[in-house]
Length: 308
Image 1 (cartoon, rainbow, N blue to C red):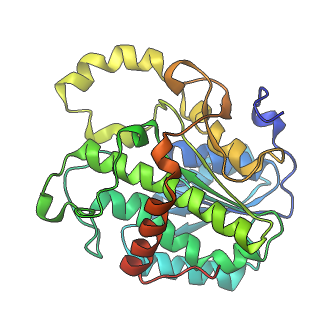
Image 2: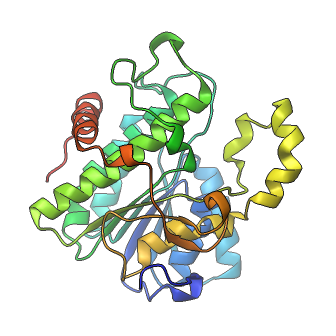
């Protein structure tokens, strides 16, 4: 049964498997790296800062000296960095069992990536879209591989506005509107990838997860806001630790009973905290026309195409 109680102890052996975790140096990503590595996987900790990545890796190795972790630099705001990461990975590894697209930015002021994309959509969706495409031959060659995209409850307020996808010049921009759009894009991508996997008859699976209310530094752009400060006490009660928040993504990546196209999140009130279980996204996340249009636009914008 797919919605049974589940914990770290339920992760099967990952010996001889290879995993990539974006944003692996902190928060949810750090917890996932530790979980995969202690179950025997070779884990690539993809970090925007090599220095912070090495510090995070060292902290895990101090506790678990026998695990296999490699730190590699990856800046999802820069397609050249994404391509360089993919090339370096492909030179070293001929398989990829788990790609956990975890890194992201949240409710930032209006800005652009190095390639001119709106910052949140560019980082949270387009960077991961390109990374997945560039690693897809390794994923496809690995029996029962998985791609996991980390979304958010904020996708429920998201809308894909193809007429103003990039909020060009800041037109119509609000930090939460942009964040919600990027997190809905994560789900549209996840479910469209699963549809294409099934059509191609591949053994791999595409799933998504969200952490609920997890206590990480992702909300740092909100911390100076008066309302955030006023609500910080109640929010702490309603939210859960990073290690708990990481569980839906970790389960999505490792639970052999899960089917492709599933979405996981916490079991508790408003999916803010609790055990990792299958949850339902909003209906628009399954919109096939929006998903196909977003896929084509993502290929056009990134200049990267999937071999599927």
